[in-house]
Amino acid sequence: MNSRHTLTDDVHLQIGDYQSVLGHFLALESAGKVKEYCNGSNDGGRWIFQILNSEFVTDLVQAINAVLESSGRNGPVLEVMAGDGRLSEALSEKLSRPVMATDAKDGRYGIAYPKWVERLDALESVSKYDPALIVVSWEPYLSTIGLDLVATGKPLVWIGNPKMCGHPDIMEMKHVTLKTPYALSRHDSFSERIFRSEVFLFNVDSASRQDQ
Image (cartoon, rainbow, N blue to C red; front, side, top):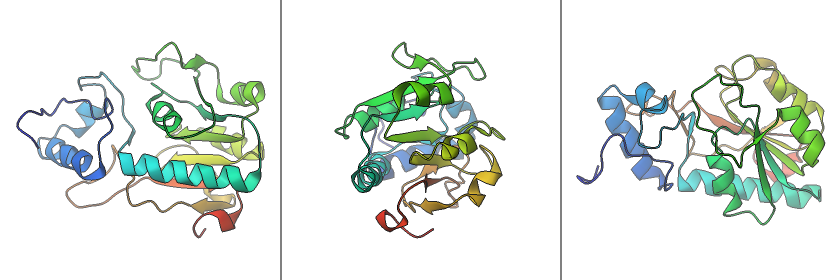
């Protein structure tokens, strides 16, 4: 790490490249502070589940664009259960479609929700905005909302680990795995290079992305 940086630097303030973000979390892991950092003890006061980096965002954008092109659907991209909306912000900088962000804001975590993240639950959001594609990242453990979103028939980008978030039955539904090498999460073993999150695409043409 650069000597001007500290362990509490907010890695989501300006999203850096994969190697720099990985380096930051290697240092946090060495200090035994990954959980503390991801639970809001960072300069941005953020709760972090999926750790963003520029290459990961690029892979997401490319996947989303491919799905939108192959589906021919109109409408915005909608992130539900969006938390502080940082992923939506990153996507909106690179996508030509409008990106909407909503969250039920139920107080489960100490998330500082910006006002522009609309207070609305996931299925109500889909009904209101009729999106061309839905994004969800690290839905609560054993939540069945992801299953309900797949059932809408709309393309869904699901980010996380089905053993740690959402309902494991979601993996019984037809999906495509993005297989990005840049996925990082709070549950990873960084020094051992054990990475536990992935991106799964539902209700998409399997020919548009990688193998199931």
